[in-house]
Amino acid sequence: MHQEYTIIEGDFVNAGKASSSVKKTLKQLDVNPSVVKRVVVALYEAEVNAIAHAYGGKVLVDIDEDKIHMVVADKGPGIPDIAQAMQEGYSTARPEVRDMGFGAGMGLPNMQKNVDKLDVKSTVGVGTTVEMEVNFS
Image (cartoon, rainbow, N blue to C red; front, side, top):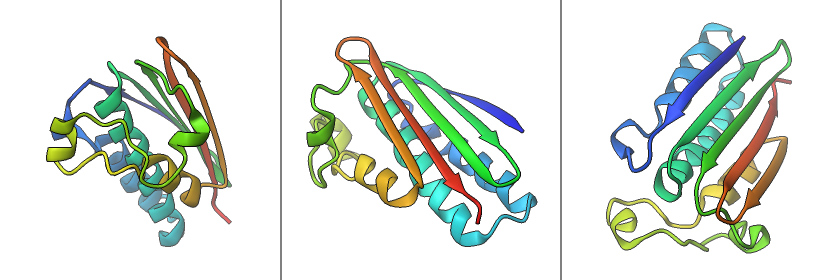
């Protein structure tokens, strides 16, 4: 099963739309609730990062019998130092994003904690692609 969603820069009102939709689908497929929670946390964090830091992008989700594969690809400033960005508390969020309660520097670390596979690729001035996989068993 394949699903696609569009991310619009700065659209915090719709942050979580993709993760909510995926949650509903996984529940309908009777996926273990603890696995659903891990998927939703990781995907939500990736969505918010793309909304807060990038100029829009896409969420691509493929659900197989035994796993879910998610790609969040954005057009944006990119991440100059991925290792630094993976550290809890590190954030480049603008003050207005922080004022809304986002940008605490937990996005990438929370993704890492909740997925079985994480691959972050980024090119400064081009954008970032976050690829995640969660096994159902």
